[in-house]
Image (cartoon, rainbow, N blue to C red; front, side):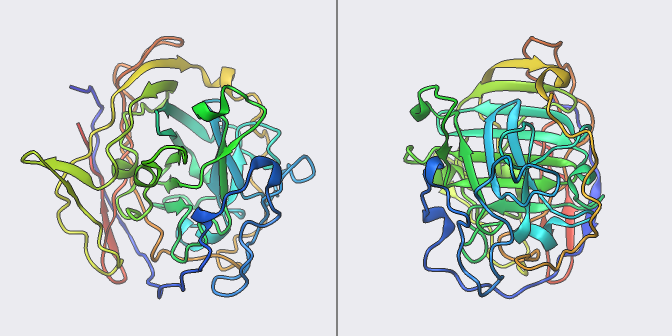
Length: 365
């Protein structure tokens, strides 16, 4: 049995309702861009939610704390990016279409994650995906204090992704043959941020179950279901792991069944018929944050005023979600350089109604 520190609390929030956006004929998830041929804009639409607010070609000329780069990476425990708002005091629901990349290392042409933002991170490499989850001070990434957040992904309510035109790459998949100089696009990816936590996953498109492992239609149940994990707060570790059971699938009386989240935010979730279990992990090696993150920005976030209604932004309707994570440090976290198999699991869940939602935290054993 997993030794997980347990803490519960009840949260509330208001989510505005928006009408469905028209689905484009060329969805982002179908667009394949070799790393050497990334376009300036992965999305070229100008109607609906507006044009893509940032850009995908990112280099030394765009690398600063005002960068609007929308190309991210998950490579290793010390080399990954998060999507977060470009302006301070923003909510994820209001800025989901215009998020920008914040990375741990220089060289990606992005903003750098500020010092003190990362408070615990776990990376898991499985046969089908690379996943990273963690605890953060979200205000250092321009996310409003107390915002329960939501989902960003390669789908979005109109097929254009959130952020619109956002791309994800990695050099961690076997098909890269250990070549760290080039990157493979992950067309299927999901990312949740809010409640001072995050979880992100890029699936290997060369594997037949990439879509199922990075399914983005379960935006209202957050990390607890989309990336079940045992990440310990205050610890930085890299693990190997097995693939999780695809989101929504569970076994009852020996029969594999699929639960589907109600499509409309106006329909309550009701009772979810299963409790997700983190996939088996092994060879977890723990590090100090100081040894990993030597490029973090020593400056604060941009001083520009918040502008949640900027061109390309969406709101907390279809394609977004919200979350609340467990708090408390991990029980039995191991010393630096050794393995750890216990800690606080990050779980996110949202139960919504027409104009308001009640959020409660799910703890899983």
